[in-house]
Length: 363
Ligand code: ATP
Ligand code: MG
Image (cartoon, rainbow, N blue to C red; front, side, top):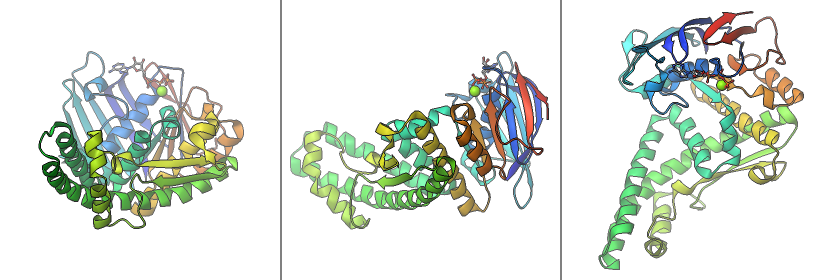
């Protein structure tokens, strides 16, 4: 899929802006704080229904304006779509796709898919396990809403279990009886979640390995590390596993076992990337995972998502840049950069210069 056109009114630092994109590479360049990331953010909004960085939607409305208006035209392999969004300064948002209003923002994922890569994504490799879980969960949820429901339900039950462990002053046998009830519900949901995480990780691990190898010649291994380790994930096995450890959880006054403690093991050249990989290797690994995610979306949906690459080229050496450009040459990609001299430009590439919220097409 690709975006043809984007129109912004009173969005962030844009009073008015209009961009017509190439279906292939688009370079959005300019100095710091001119509005490059704001463009990617506006596209991301149409795909995910929320900003990748704003805490509240209010921030998105241009200072002093009453509302922001966004319009997008995009195509998938079947047809053309258009989207409209209005964000009021109190943060209320209205979205229409193909002239029909969207009530649940998660519906947006049925239309436009993007994968964003920004400098903070380095934390997928470097940071704590919850960042890797968020990556996995959001990637799966984008395609399988039922996964998101299971996850939300799991967290609700886990909260109840934790409050039982924290506040209970009844006899240990009473506590255990209630614990078993929560554990049964958790086991059922955990199995679904673990199976989905296994499938997802297996699929992106293979793709990411190939991509990393292409970009840098390095060996990247990604492995799902479930907190509950079993030969096979069945509800009964997880239930027994949790119940067998009830005493330890009661002693600890909190839930010690479950999918809330899962992680991904990421290795570059056979060593834990968190500890031993260089900054550039970590960045390449995170990038390979994101590109693998876009291939995963393509495998499931039959549509390749749009890649939004925020300010990453400058952090890669020239050979990594060249390989990356080659790798994404036949996909639509929106790249921001503070310099114009990016590798892999060709005649299909469009370039936009951004200066204080004005866009000039300099292709
Ligand atoms: P960098 O190269 O540093 O990443 P950038 O070009 O990506 O910069 P953006 O993050 O897109 O910059 O835009 C930042 C600019 O937008 C800042 O100058 C900021 O003050 C301005 N800005 C952010 N929100 C609003 C708003 N609601 N109204 C007006 N201006 C805003
Ligand atoms: Mg930026």
